[in-house]
Image (tube, rainbow, N blue to C red; front, side):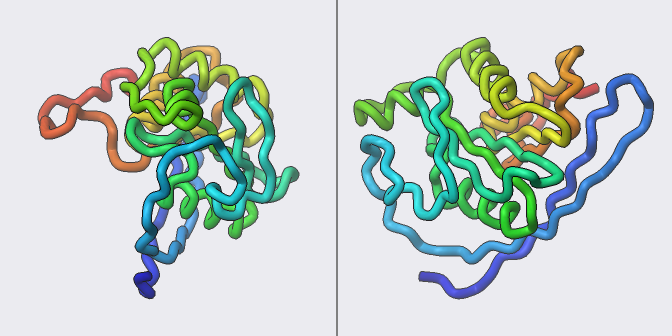
Length: 195
């Protein structure tokens, strides 16, 4: 186990829905880096998730909720293409946000939930399935003070959803691991939807 602490600042720019104004939220996220032996994917079990305060059913996949129900912001996080919602990276962000008094919600896209059930690795679902999953989770947990985002592919899908008109409940966007260009091609930006 590594004993040093990583500190990063997470800045969230609010989404302006035609008002021309922006609000910035700042989180000082501390996390202890750990060397963890990755367990084989299996059926979801609380022991495999570490220490989530609550688990709520959502379709065929649970939601992991960290932090108080009456938090000023709910931050919904989606996983990347290759790692589940309970990966060390995702758990560290959710736990630290909860420690700061915010509510963090994590969920899995259908292909990852199926991988967990069957142990069979499949590629990510098509974009429309990923976006529909985001909409369903937002519909379940939405409300005032909603922030969406995620790691890599999950953050990119959140950015596409946030850019759609009519998403007045989404106040800010969190993108971790800069997913806006194809792997190995940083010159080919995919950020036109955010202009």
